[in-house]
Image 1 (cartoon, one colour):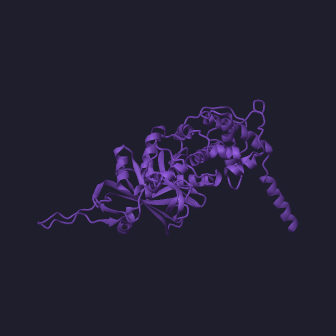
Image 2 (cartoon, rainbow, N blue to C red):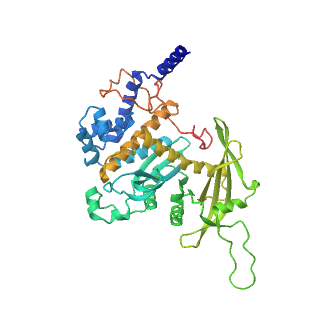
Image 3 (tube, helix red, strand yellow):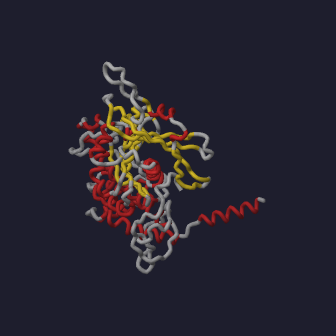
Length: 459
């Protein structure tokens, strides 16, 4: 039995062995991928450091900081650390190129722009923007930095396109801390929602979309939803379970004939669903999963939500989505949303937009676990933004490689021709996503609606 086990174990290990030729084909693709991003870098050493750093982010290093990446490639750490934290190259052209590529590759008129805050736990008080605040990563109030992420989701895929560091008011008004951390003078205090509106104004036209989505932190302030309405955007934003609404589909209490006419009572959204009957829920068969069909239940209602000033807001649609186990017996999760979409909007469209927010959460976790998004060891403003944009670029390369492996788009990333490309001089690099390469003809990719709406279950 031991001999058979060892033989089978060796067979499995042999199957996991990746041929060196695979990486020889990946490296030329990575070189071509990086060219449009480094065009704005004026010095040769900056171009070299940018390529080296992205390669390190794509490697299997445990800690993907400048020091570890430099040692991985046999370089002195000071050069890479200077490039990351002190060198005066502008990260914005690289970000704009990333937005352009995502819009062209994944763009679809039914796309969803998602805003999602993300926390980076930190020790000490010197890192720019750090303070004790709510940290979603640890699920509690913690010493951390917070970034507001902007993601894009369509039927063709999903990706992160931008991040803005939230600078708390204590930092924004402390000139000594600002100067020490290198915060530019033009930077003023902005709430997280104001940062979202700035990113939307800057990138919205480059990312075809029909929805704006976000978690309950984004959807809680009524002024933010009003701002999106004023911009002509259609939103579906999560709200806390204690959000108070008035059901506009029920008649108000009868008038007694004197005094002020009574209004509909305020009701918490988690209490409102208790009054629903079975027929009020619509089952949405999202897709066939590995263990059978995944079905969610959706209920919607015309409501008016209570504002921060305890006033009645404009008419909105309350959307409740609950996830049940596969036996359809137990409710696993219930999410609440407010939207300015038409009350006649189909439930499947609400479910699709809601799932987009979860897709970006997955994308953030992927960037942190596979592309070193949270592995930086820089304290100043410039270093933080340099590391973040290079990590987003590395994550985008992983997405393109995964699409290439699924043969979704073979034209933009065709296989390397050994007659035209020389072997990369860098040391061998083990990458998390390295898929077999097959020769194929170059073809122009035209996005088409050939599949069902965005699935609600990760494949």
